[in-house]
Amino acid sequence: MEKKEILEKIRDLVCEQLSIERDSVKPETEIYKGLGADSLDLVEMLMNVESEWDIVVEDGEVGDLKVIGDVVDLVYRKIN
Image 1 (spheres, rainbow, N blue to C red):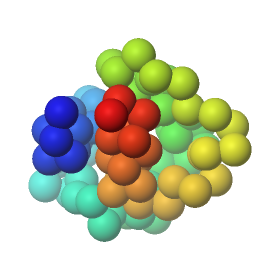
Image 2: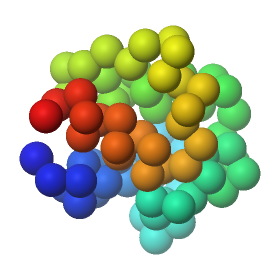
Image 3: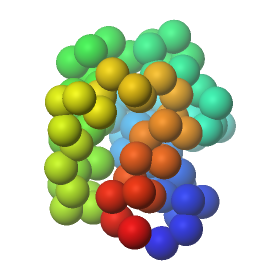
Image 4: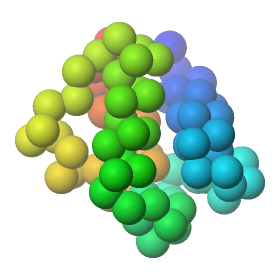
């Protein structure tokens, strides 16, 4: 799976979860400031990501996730 495909699916997940416009979710979008998400939203988003791709995001990896592109990169690394 290519990063572009991962981004598209993450966009779908985030937009559904946060009830936001799809255009507002880009690789450079900050998870907290750009999406208006809080730490609980991030946990829920990561649970959805884990379920979608059948992966495990370790606690130590969460702190590195600042923008949507970081989540895309993490998923890409774990599935390839």
